[in-house]
Length: 320
Image (cartoon, rainbow, N blue to C red):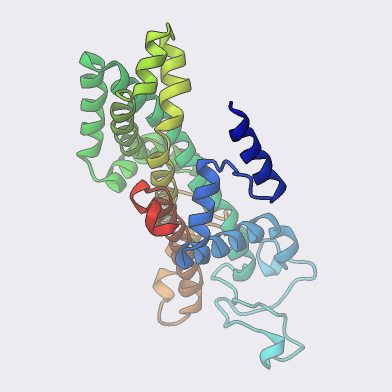
C-alpha cells in the first residue's frame, strides 16, 4: 500500500466517512422494510405469533371443554350469538366474544388456540419438505446423470397428481389424524422444493468460485454443502415462505373433511367443517375461523412476495 493511499484512508477515517461492508441479508431486510405490503404481512404475522404464544393468557376458557363442564357451569344456548358486555350485552350473562359452538365451547378461545395449530402445521410441514427436497434437489443437480433422472422422474410423478387429492389419498391410507395429515402435506410439497433447489444448483455449480474450490482439491461434501448450497438457498427461502400459506390451506381442507385434526382439538378447518351447516342460522361460527385462515394465508403471501422482490438481484438498482 502506498503512502498516498494510506494518507487517504486516514483522512476518510478522520472525517467519519469509512466504508462499511454490508452483507446480503442486511440489504435484503433494508429492501423488505421499504415495501408496505411486506410490512403489513410482517405485522399480521407477528401478531399471530404473539397470539399463539400468549394463548393461555388470552383465552378465557379451555378450548376443549363445554360450558356445562366449566367452573362454575354455565347454562347457555348452543350456537348463541356473541355476548360482549362493552357493547351492551347484559352483565348477568356470561361473556363470549365470538359466541359458543354447537358443543357449547367458547369460540373465541378455540380461535386463539387454533392459531397455534395452524402456525405449527405451516412451519413443521414446510421444514420437513424443505429438508428432504433440498437434499434430493442438490444431489440431482450436482451429480446429474442417472441419479438426476431417477430423482426428478419420481418428483414428476408426484407433481402429476393434484396436491390436495394426493394428500387425501395418503391420509386415507395412513388413517385420519393430525400427524398423518402433516406427513401427507409434507410429502406432496417435496417436489416443488426439489425442483427449485435443482435449478439453483445447476446455475451455481458453473460459477468460477466453485471451479476454483474444485481445482484446489475440495471434496464433494465441501463443494456441495459449503460452496453451492449457501449460494442456492435464496429462491428456496421465497418458495418456503409462500409454501407455508399453502400448507395451512391444505391442513384446513383436510380437517374440514374430517381427515386432519380430530375433535375436540381446536383447528380452524375442523371448526369450519363442524359448523358449515349453520352458515345462515349462526354465520359468526363460520365467519371467524374462515377469516382467521384468510388473514394467516394473506400474511405469508405478502411476506413471500416482499422477500421475492427483496432478493431479486434485478431490483437492486430500483431499490437503492
